[in-house]
Length: 398
Ligand SMILES: Cc1cc2nc3c(=O)[nH]c(=O)nc-3n(C[C@H](O)[C@H](O)[C@H](O)COP(=O)(O)OP(=O)(O)OC[C@H]3O[C@@H](n4cnc5c(N)ncnc54)[C@H](O)[C@@H]3O)c2cc1C
Image (spheres, rainbow, N blue to C red):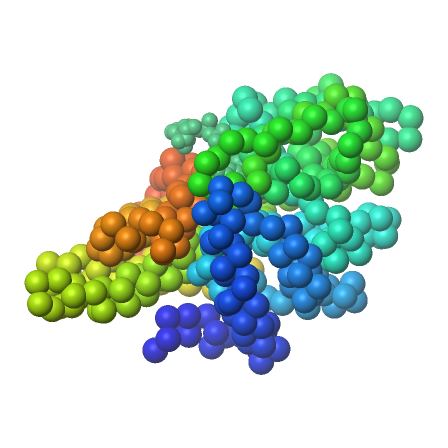
């Protein structure tokens, strides 16, 4: 049974076409270009965002009435997996852009859609979610960015860090504190070359394709229509999306590890040492067998959580479990694949070094390992104390 069949069995014919389309797009020149950029120490070329957008893929989940495909979560996961086989960071970044377009299509006002959506779908207006700050990533309680009422809109001040695509985005959805009570609200903050915005790349050697950046806003004006989630509603809206984001990251990590295992297995089957293929040496064979076992286990956890998200069922525990396990397994497993391949596995002749450097960062984005353990731990009594268990594991909500 092909590795991703359990997901594909649940997709519509139209969605299967989108996955196939992604598979064809990502093979060949795209794949070579992504790896080439990594070898030169550069982020992948921006033209690939334009070309992905031209294929309509930034509208994967946008509403059909807005020009999108209105695809399911499982389809989004499969499209991302096809790309993550070639590069984890590029898949993370393009899906991040797609996610912002989806948000405006589904949750934005008519005015926001009029100002933003066309550009977000055609790749001329790039946006990123922005919650993290230099003084706090996991601890959103420490969030210090403020939005102050001014005539005709709001004035934003604060520093946002670790922003995906941050060196090139034209706008952010910013979580900020409003008024004396300091309730959280979300604003669409467009940022070009204004004096009120400073932008610095965060140096990440080996993983520049994330284009991570820190952006500082000093009394930066946004108009009234920029309010996306009202004070008091923003945290709930942002956190509602986080389970899906965790499953999505886990699914991409699984796809990157699957690609690495395929690469290592092919190489070890052809490379001869001591008179027989490397893969015929039992010691090495067992090491890759161990990778295969954990890969399958990670994939099963991811599929379970993806199915829950797809069916709009509570998925807090399942999402945290699959993200931690899949990312840890991918980091360990890609490293094993490199080792099994020999020194050449760590060289530019293979892409496993790039995948390892990029997947390594998945342990932070959308919640760290410790935060995943915290979510699972808090719900142990609800999820596991009853020997029969809740109707669906992981249905304990937040
Ligand atoms: C590739 C990548 C892309 C990202 N993209 C974005 C983006 O687009 N937008 C955005 O807003 N953010 C983004 N982030 C930021 C990401 O969400 C944060 O890195 C993450 O929330 C953790 O915050 P931190 O790095 O500040 O670590 P900290 O919160 O400072 O934590 C440091 C360490 O302490 C541990 N820790 C913290 N609290 C506890 C506790 N209570 N118990 C035990 N251990 C604890 C953490 O698990 C971690 O190991 C991205 C990060 C990466 C790496």
